[in-house]
Image (cartoon, rainbow over all chains, first blue to last red; front, side, top):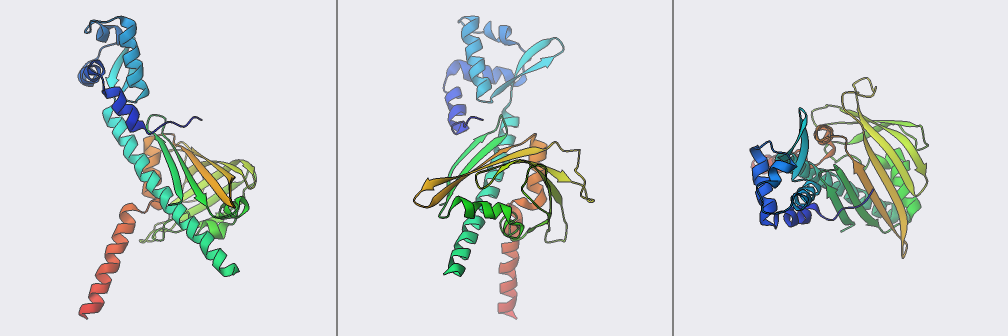
Length: 112
Length: 168
């Protein structure tokens, strides 16, 4: 299991490029594959593919199979939902760690 | 601040939290190994946990329930997959039905605990949680393991109760 840096950095990093922002915008309601998306930009297929891969790693888009095609879709809702849940889970564990610390302190005082 | 780092990955649905304690690894391990101590920190004060079956040897099924302010008792279980006292614990956690049997509707998650000395008599503990789905996370949070709303409601109740005393 590898640790990832705060993913907001990755998200914002991914969005700090005009082409990538345009891909995210298009992929909200379009059902285009990588090749179709690539046709909109004055750059090579490989370059667009790289942009999409980067967006995918940032969780901003996902590739979904629709019939025999693979389409790129923006995944903002899912990402935000997951993010919120993880924030709540973090709070849960912060509470636990506070109670663990308290418990350790309490037992030290009884030992004294 | 004893929580020293938190890493969250919304795509992979994982969270790693690191904390440091002014105690030995053995002492920190006890917090997990002694069910009575575990009960004092697993659930928030408003939703305490009761461990009805407990043990940390691999193959053991740990059973617990939470008790809510309304008397509701959601149940959960852990399957101990790996244990190396006082340094490592790998647990598969799931939800249980009212009769204590695993609830198959929800896929299980995983919790990996690492406890190691960090020098000067201090100990670092890291918890890596892997969630199977956002639904399972929702369920877990709804189970009363989080303070959040419920805690806040409890505090409001306490404040209101004080007011009553004062006006009476």
